[in-house]
Length: 260
Image (cartoon, rainbow, N blue to C red; front, side):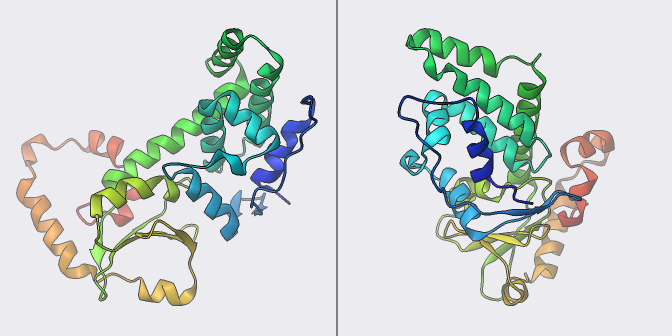
């Protein structure tokens, strides 16, 4: 089953005709999916585009047709749509309906009225399609911010700091700017073991192969012991709150948290 952004944006063409009858041209997307478990198998072209989107100075000129119309009408609506898609939740139908609702404002000539219409669509939580997109997008943003604090890095024998994770959503590209600023010139990599993807300090997200997986192993023993000692030293047993801890650090992340 084809389940890619190219198809998703193309589906917005239905009932959306502009005066120039523009069509959605080929953004470099090609992705397959096993619908039974909704586990996407990403192609490198998909990943490169998504990574470029999360880079400062993203060039919107590579978008055409309804995708270009959508981002020109409302960057926020486009951002919501893309984040909802990155959630990997089965909400393509809702995303398509949401996108079509936004594009319906393209024929409103009065700019103020057009913006008011778009804002009303985005904030209409009574609409089930809009609510699904907002919720899926929020889940992605929430996990991005969680990972900024929950990733644990250890150097491998080459001195590259490695962090491993299994996020619920495809969030690696959204972590690039934060960790690039945090590490500066120090080499680092974040490995998404669930999707077999790696975000490297050069700003690229790549599909891992067996050789990379072997060389990316971190020498974690000494560093983990040091982190555990630090955590034990600053920990105040009288203020332990397991329920609050699980709220900020859900159990599904504990596999990669040495202190837990």
